[in-house]
Length: 484
Image (cartoon, rainbow, N blue to C red; front, side, top):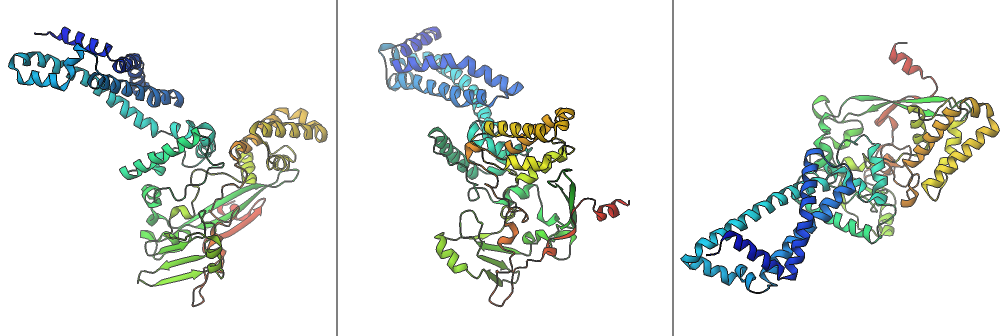
């Protein structure tokens, strides 16, 4: 009767007599200590470096699994000689049918179960940590650095920077998880083959419905009342004059705190169902809008050239129900226009407004096209230093530190919104909120979309907001509101 050590010895000899198994065993032996140690460390302390995590879960892990597969393929299908006979199905049948050999088989089963348990522990830890790694912001935003750097940068500067990528791009449900992984595999292949588009197209058709994502946190029935909004701007004069626009935004829709739908979120009030047909993938031109009333009737608003637009576009227009994303099309990956980007840096103190003409000079240098970020930074610094040395030498000397800091702030305003290597320029990505930098609301609210009975979609400013002050240096309304 063979003892357990003899069975282990026979197992080892069987591996040695199969080249396939031997290669697999070498891979497993080399990978196991590193893989197990890395997984335990990741569980306890969390590995911060996304590339190190990728090496573990996308290279070392699959290598370990592949090695095990090779071991068993070699033992059962690419056999050696006598010793491997212990692991063939024919030989095992004899052990199950012959009582004298059964005790030997129990030892073999014990050994197999022992190895299986070890592998299951490693598989479980590997699968769990690999799943969470591929759901992490680091994997989404850093692994394909050049491709995703613009989106990651915009994400980190957005109001949703503490919401992980998968919360919106995948969400709950196995079907969307599978779709995202299939799409991700295709994208990785495009990166590997350098066939990805520059810039990356906005995935308006590939996102989950907004009501499965946005409305997990934002409840339309709770949008009510008005909101005071103050927009800061700095003029391009010598003093960089600070002016403000004060708006009273009519946020309300309906829900439990309003008697009827009104204001900006009228579009998502429970009693309103709005559908539209766009003439292209980007949904920038909307020739037809449909309002479905609660009584079952419909009002169809069409632009005068709707038929012609649809015909010229060659786009097979689909009827889409309007939701959050149709206005909030960039809720997270927000690219600012140059004026707003510079104004924000002045407001935050990154650019010193006491430096004469700093807003004007900033706008002159950042709106140009540069071949690379390094070229942009060098040109911005060179031209600004030269300008103040030649025209405001006193400022260049007495405010040298403030000027240096301001130049860094202007460079940051550029670097956070323009990415030459991905062909992302100022205005590449449009934002449909409002109508300052894009047609936005006016895609529909243009008083040209008309029903057969002559009713039009309003363009009245007061529908959504009341202008209390517009680009005033010291708005009186703010004094009144503050009781001064």
